[in-house]
Image (cartoon, rainbow, N blue to C red; front, top):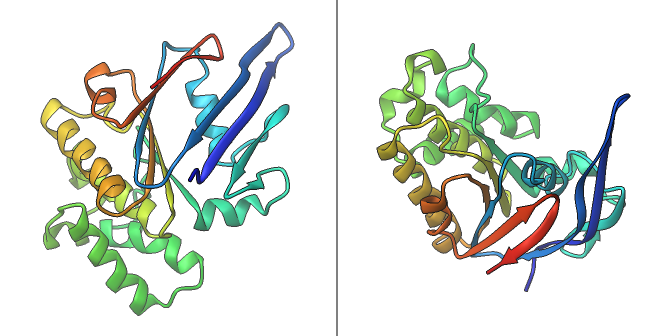
Length: 223
């Protein structure tokens, strides 16, 4: 059964100089325990769709729904805190917080006690295969692969059922890319999460259970 759906979604960017139809009647469904790859050239609407799925913005028409509830009707701040998490290509770690503190942050923001957040953060860092020594390191002391793993651990801190990853391997070498994709696939297949990733890499996309291809804001292939 689908956990997240997009139905006839339209979205248009308007500037002083032009109007761009970023999404044109996009419909798709996402199930827990599955990994999805959204692919397409630059400007095809991938990032716009991810932003709408994450509740960062609302469609002009059509609807995005999580477990049947439309994003237009829900508390989207709570949705982003508890139901869906986003992992970005640029990591977006807090530079003045250690790895452990970065993972603790969203939990403490939600009212989890310091002691509980610390224990859960350590567990999450182990889950993404980071050693104990990384806990006290700041982002500038970590490799790109280590930073991305911390970002994934932080995304998991809310126990979100949906994990959205925007080009999660774009800044990584081939070995770290493989490791990150393995972690994301395990989250879907072993923990039952719904994992949706944007990628320009066809090899990475081929490892997903389903591929959604966009062109000029429309779905041209869904497999």
